Length: 184
Image 1 (cartoon, rainbow, N blue to C red):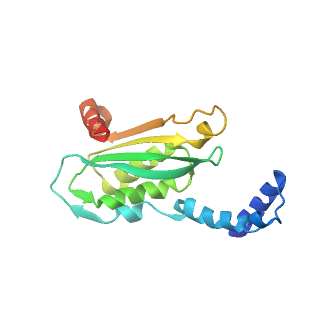
Image 2 (cartoon, rainbow, N blue to C red):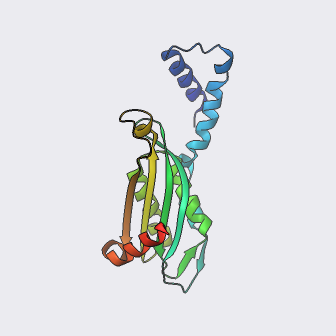
């Protein structure tokens, strides 16, 4: 990440909206924004294979669910936040991963300029590729600031996306079981 370019861009942006970049409250803003970018876009340099590489043998072949994983991301269209909950289910095929690793996988992809539809796919594909389960389902519900504070201005509206892979793809009852457990 090029912090100097970010600082220059923020300075130009502030000047472009008519701000005085020399006033006290804005003098350190370009540097603060550059440091913030390292944090909120940190997933750009991370690989989902890392958290998913620590696996454990397990004879369990029933559904594993991690729900209510809070995430924050940034819409690539407006550079405004979207945030919500990710719910993940998978059916192990001899291996499981530590539950915190599922949340870490979400963070890898959420900390990028992103769209929710792609975020959902990326999480499912990473689990499918690295954990090789019998099936995966990812369900995300999020509020988008580009919908609530600009444009149509509809606060409280939620966008829901799902991705099913493997045995979840064709098994409506399995999908319903997961969704029921998410809503509990």
